[in-house]
Image (cartoon, rainbow, N blue to C red):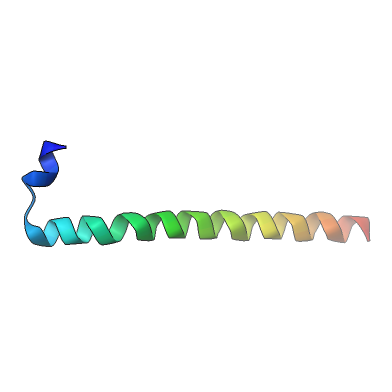
Length: 46
């Protein structure tokens, strides 16, 4: 983790903000895809 200490403050801030945002985006997309698949399966059984 030495590479973090070598970064400038601006880069550290960007890294600190972007990582949780990317995680949130990933889980949001997974949830949307899961709901779309469930809706497709429910429409088949009706």
